[in-house]
View (cartoon, rainbow, N blue to C red):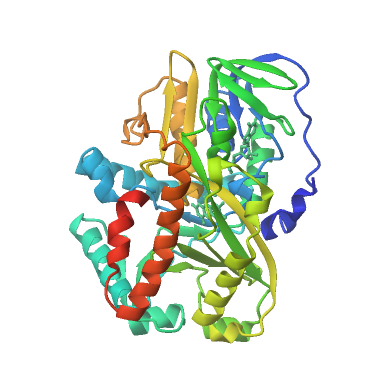
Length: 454
Ligand SMILES: Cc1cc2nc3c(=O)[nH]c(=O)nc-3n(C[C@H](O)[C@H](O)[C@H](O)COP(=O)(O)OP(=O)(O)OC[C@H]3O[C@@H](n4cnc5c(N)ncnc54)[C@H](O)[C@@H]3O)c2cc1C
């Protein structure tokens, strides 16, 4: 497989993708990790740093960073898939606040480790601008800033239209929210750099080694069985293909387009001088970043959920969604009219039924997991890695007391209900944005389907 062709990020990762050796026969170790995305690699990293004597083996079906970790939008943010309000209702306001603080710290931790380990992942912490471009979006922006102020955090500022436009000159800007808690980065450089780093600390990474079943203290592959005290499932959007897990986490595709490197004159017009990541307050998620080499990378949801959670490269290429992303970007920034779009790709993120990420370890079976990050995994995986370290080492810490630890999401509905529900939800979000543009009022449809979307 030509891994360099997977995305702009893979192509520009300055990596030859020479495969690491596959597993050859049975072996025993202390910790076996299934999946070499950020979850698996951060877990290996923190465990190896804490306990250099542990035998840690990572089993990867393809190549380190093959999945969402190599392909994402590069927002390393403090966002957690379950909102503060939802977490507070599930646990307590104090626990929700602790999770939020941990998320904010995770952004800085990713920046710190990348620098400390010499991982050149083009990391710049410029924060995030979320524009309000319709009256209902402005209502949501104000509500978000008010909620942050009420909860005593200082991380969301409401910007006036003029202040927002001075930083990001999109069409129709009425205001924005700004948070400093986000770093823009090059996803594949981070994933590939982490893989090299963990090897330096003594971790073994086997590529082209697909795990066909995870059992208590065992990861079974076609090339041999790995026996371990702890087996960590770090397969996120691919989880449904594992026996017994078909309804645990569903894959939803997010797609991205990228421009050629843009000249200074264009950037003078657009802004993003601090490499802020950006979005707007629409319902159907979109996200953008200015890359280190001055491209605009812009992604969004909208691709249909595949029946029975079937993963396929075909779902990563949806011409209609790519076209919509390109036209949305030109509509936001007319200066891009005529600019060349050079790359388009996609990947699967993972969603649990209650849209709440979780991490945990069952000490009896030795089975550990982390995932369900929706589109917020770049920093949350780092928190997962540090938490799994503490769980595996059996040392209760502030991290192991966070509310997402040990949380069990319910299973998704069987098909065809799942397919129907998720796709109705996705479609409704697109329609809700159209409804708001037309009426200038908050969408009733969005409110009606909100329970479907967690
Ligand atoms: C297009 C896109 C844009 C995104 N943008 C952002 C963003 O800007 N910010 C953000 O925070 N999050 C974003 N996300 C989400 C984020 O990328 C993920 O949450 C995060 O990368 C998940 O990391 P992971 O290691 O858990 O999973 P993955 O990176 O998907 O890694 C799982 C790995 O497991 C391997 N694997 C699967 N099954 C097996 C098996 N049976 N045996 C062995 N190996 C297996 C896969 O090959 C893969 O390498 C985005 C996701 C996508 C797809």
